[in-house]
Amino acid sequence: MKSINRGSAGVLILLTAVLLLGGCAVSAHKENMAVTPTVVLKKFPYSVRVETRGGSETGAMDSSNISNADLKAAIETSIATSGLFKSLTQANGEYVLTVSLTQLSKPVFGGAFTVDMETAWALVRSSDKSVVLRKVIKSSHTATFSDSLIGATRLRLAVEGAARKNIEEGLKAVSEQSL
Image (tube, rainbow, N blue to C red):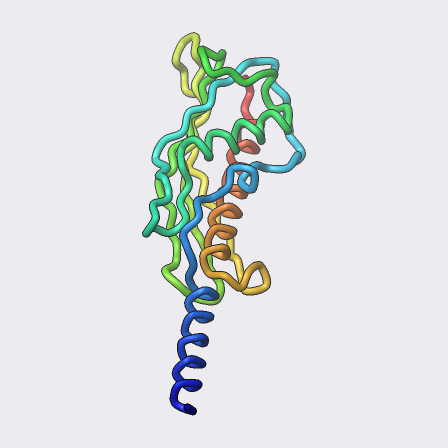
């Protein structure tokens, strides 16, 4: 009887550890990547179209990723909230902002998850195809046990935080331009 209870307790401890350290992969949420209103140096009276590249969907057996659609939505929300551009368009805007996700480094497991993100930002004037801005933005964010006991959630929070910081720095770089 005691061996059954010990075995059951061992299984329960193992399952608890797996749930706390692992969990199912969840993609980054676009709402959590958007930047809350920050100080924008300038507000431009132009329309902009946002394009994103390099992202990937989160698979069932994968760790948290950022899809192109979610990154685009987070950037567009951040632009609209900040008022950086007069309007966003899905067609031909006066400017095209392209953000390419070039690197997303994530830990496999651990207590504190630090995610490093690198993107390439390019702002191009549509009328003459001149490049107004070309900049690599690097960001990092750490999520700890105080953020979540569940590993998959900690990883998602770290990915979202790195993306949020990246978008904030990218929009700041855009706002410093003379258009």
